Image 1 (tube, rainbow, N blue to C red):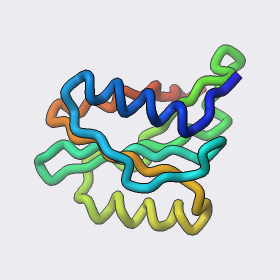
Image 2 (image 1 turned 180 degrees about the horizontal axis):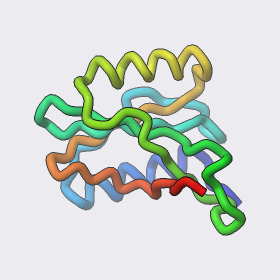
Image 3 (image 1 turned 120 degrees about the vertical axis):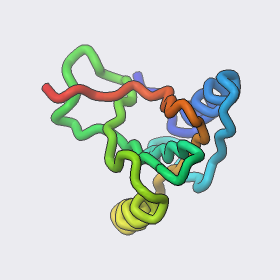
Image 4 (image 1 turned 135 degrees about the horizontal axis):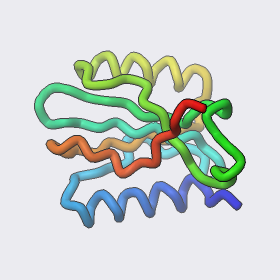
Length: 114
């Protein structure tokens, strides 16, 4: 069974903060099932964006897990913001979380191509 987006985000925020990262909710989405996007700020002018992995990247063992894929990797902030604007036009109920970490830790489970 998959946990709600609101619950998952709360856990993510706690995990990142325990690791010493500044993490904040930029945009609250639908509590039950809003898609979650994570901005990773490397604090050097580079940003990455992670979003829900496509269904084709899931296998039977991943049922109920939230898997993420890298959508934008180490680009200027405007590239990430432009991609998020595009995502918002598709789904306005999405969550946006920003995590600042010089070491580039996302704390996400990334999907692997099948």
